[in-house]
Length: 475
Image (tube, rainbow, N blue to C red; front, side, top):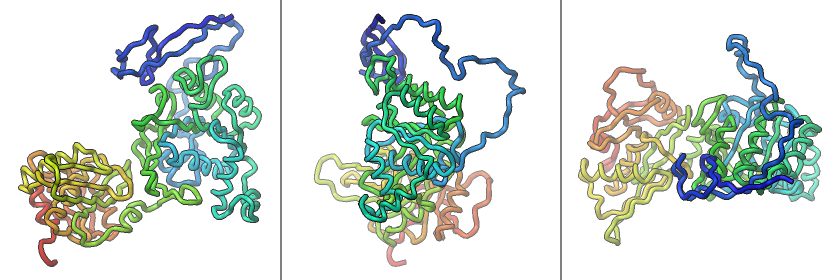
């Protein structure tokens, strides 16, 4: 009979200790250790060695083929963009996101589309086969209720090479893989999968780490592309050991406000493409619908000549996005005025308010300041500082921003404007959407010429930018 022992594992970095520790000495995380019961089986000499192939041979670097990996085409253009152009055979992709954000819906759509290219196996450990079937019918025929002739027609349209199974035992899942021989495997989710040789429950640190490692070995040895759905913590990070993100090739996050229809699929790690790439979707009744021109969609409902509204141009990966920044000030009823950002870092907002107060002379010490990024987006880069400052100044002075004007620039503590990267790409995107003027930091070094079709107003300080941006009186 196998012996068991107790150990403690850090959820963040995977460090193991024999006794509980309040703070991990490796990653400095507090209260991150969880108890595990580890089985110590008797050594089995007949067992095949673990590894990618079980037998490896060193080779000279020059003898290894360096041809680019051929990708499987993915008909969902925004998804393919984030992956780097398509699905790489043998890759392992981890997708995380808040509950109900649309992870399962997006991957079921992917399975329906990819089944026309090759065999797809969808493994679910959280929903029954009937539930997934009902969602698939809704995706193909949104107006059907599952009993109408339209629903029956949708069932006839299901691809023949899409297989579905509800299973959590990884050994049984591997048997299904051997039987169906898929080109694409979808596991929903990794926290529900368990390996019977480990006594710990599904979702534990050991089960998540070992299951992901076995799926990686499967992908690298057979060429099957594996998509894994992962749960997230309340902080928004992938649940489980941090090593899970190191095991996979690509880590994607599906983001968005659950009260908004727009969803952003963001790449934070990609061994086969650019990181920080973003795909934009809209959640509709027929599933996740691509938004090919997100800037136009985000600006569709903005009010022209409304005080407190400014347009910023932010970069999401290699894509410039135009977003509306709304600012509102009101007299405070308390001793300490409120600073409330939605979609922005509160520290950047505090910095902007301090510069407006100290360098420009706008009194905000008795004003509550609210700033909102329209559309449920989150903007983290400093290039939106100027638009935030102009929106706040526009609200407190009740002066609208110049029509068809975008604002790009970082604000320094001295009140100066600093240049940001990829300025020509931002300006070209603004010009393509019909904006006539752009207020940017003054260029002190020669670089790529400004794009044609848009007037460039260069400002050295925030005060100069406010004078150029705000309409004082009738235009």
